Length: 107
Ligand SMILES: C=C(O[C@@H]1C=C(C(=O)O)C=C[C@H]1O)C(=O)O
Figure (cartoon, rainbow, N blue to C red):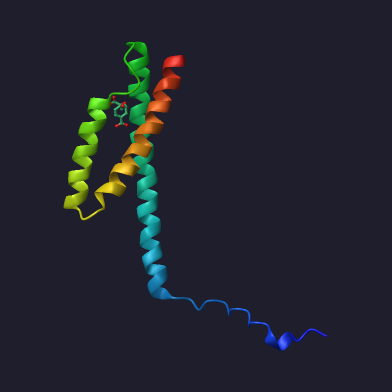
């Protein structure tokens, strides 16, 4: 017969932790703000994509990207946010924008 007494005791349901819950409430608000900010950014870049397609402009502008990344890295350093992370985050967004612009060009 199996010795059930040697099994680990299942974890008790976590006690409500008011401090953690308050931090998480604030995280929830920041995450919601991030989504709204991103939605607005993509709304504008969609318009840029349509404009570029109408005027036969290239989907990507590496000079503009380089300037934006340098500006954002400096802002991140000032704000004590990891500039490497900031660059990767912006690169990820810009790459998605360029994909949208390529699609807009294809019609
Ligand atoms: C939005 C533009 O298109 C692309 C996307 C960019 C961005 O998301 O910041 C920057 C440059 C372009 O490669 C633009 O040309 O301004």
